[in-house]
Image (cartoon, rainbow, N blue to C red; front, top):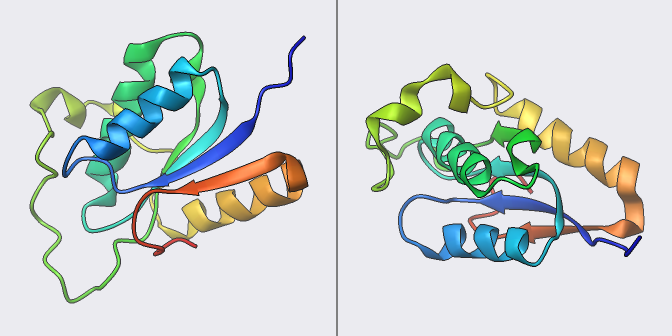
Length: 130
């Protein structure tokens, strides 16, 4: 069996296509995505976008854990959905694994301990969780 590079993606998916393209590229290249965490403003909606993207790709990626992380500057308005949000994303099917942002950071730390040097964190957004 070929070695699959393990990655954890920390993303602000939803404002434009770059993060979605990066996640799709990782799946197309058969990376082992051990998890996704979201950052910046409405992290719950971003997590839902990531979960739908994973589920749509298939190949077992629907089971990748997705956590909503920290939104960043608390003074910023967090009510606007990311621009690619659709009504079906409100379904519980796409709900993130957590209800508090600390769980996303704990997940990242746990992955670092579990996979150590075999893990690469791919930070695609602001470093709110890192």
